[in-house]
Image (tube, rainbow, N blue to C red):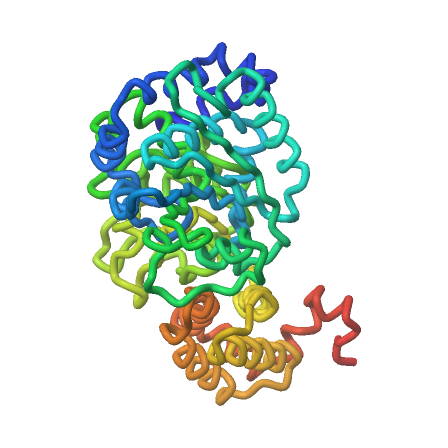
Length: 446
C-alpha cells in the first residue's frame, strides 16, 4: 500500500473548511516553517528530490535556488493551476477537496523565497473550484494565516486568486505570466527566464499545484524522509489521473517506482481493463507524451518491468519509451482506434496553438487535415509518410513545448501503430462505417 502524503485526509467530512483542516494538523507545518530560516526550507526541498509535478519534472529545490534576489525588487511565487492537459485532472480534484493544503504550501514557499505577494492562476473553466479556493483564502485571512504578521512571525503575505480565460497555452509558464499581467497569453522567448525576469519584470517562480502541496509534507517530515519514498531520482509520491478503459478510473496517489502492470491491474488501483478486454495502448503522462503499445508500457525494450517513474517510463527514449509528464494516465482497450484518438488530440492542439510560431501554427493544421482525410476514407500511404514528415518539422522548432506536444503523439502513433493507419487506407469502408464520429457528422459511406 502506497503512502498518502497528500490525500491522507481527503475523505474527512468537511475537510475543505478551515476548522476541520486544522483538526487534522493543518497549518502546523506553516507554524514550523515560520520558525525556520528561509534558506533552510529551500535546502529541505532540495534534499527531498521533489521534481515538478506539472509535466517537466525539473527539480523544485533547484528551481527555487535559481531565483534572483536583487535588493529592493519584489519576488513572486505563482501557482500554475491552469490544468489543461487532456487526460489530467488531479490538480482540480485536490483543489476541490483540499484547498487549504495548497494555501499552506503557497505560504511556506513564499516565505522561503522572500515573496510578500503571490498568485494562484486557475483555469477559466474551473469556476466552481475558483469559488472553493476563494472561500478558503477568505477563511485564512480571517484566521490570521494570511495577511499581516502571520501567526505573530512578522511575516506579511498576501495571496491572490486569478482566473484565466481557458487557454491551453497558458499552462506554459511564460504564457501564464503574460496572461496574469493582462496580456494575450503568448509564450515568451527565453532567456531571460522567469527566475530573473517574470511577473512585471520581477524574479518569479512558477510551480504546479501538486508541487506546492508536496512542500507541506516535506517540511513537516523533513526532506530526507520524503526522499526515502520512491526510487532513484524519482522520489516521493505522485498523483495519477487514471482514465480511459479502466475498471476503476480516478485519482490515485502512488509511490513512484510502482510497476505499471500493478497500477493497471491490481484491485488497489485501477482493477484492470473494463469488460475484461485486452489492453492495446497507454498514454502515460497526458496527451502530449508518446503513446506506447501494451508490450512497451508493461516492459521496457530490455525486458525489464516498466515502473511509474521518470526514468523507467523514459527508458529507451522516444523510440520505445515515453514520459511520466503530468500523470494523465489514459488506458485504451483492444477496440480503440489509434488513428481516431490521434485525430482528437491533433484537432485539440491545432485549436489551442497560439499561432506565434509558424511550424506549430501551420503544422498542427496540416496534421489535422491529413488525419481527417485518412479517417474520411480518402487517405493514401503517402499521407502517412506526410504526417511523419510534418511532425518532424514541428518538433524542437517552436518557442514553447506546444509544438513538441502536438508532434510527439503523431510520431509515436505512426511508429508503434502504423498498421492501424494502413488499414484505414487499404480498407476504409470496413472501418469508417461503424465510427460514431462519422455517424453524427453524416459522413458514413452509403
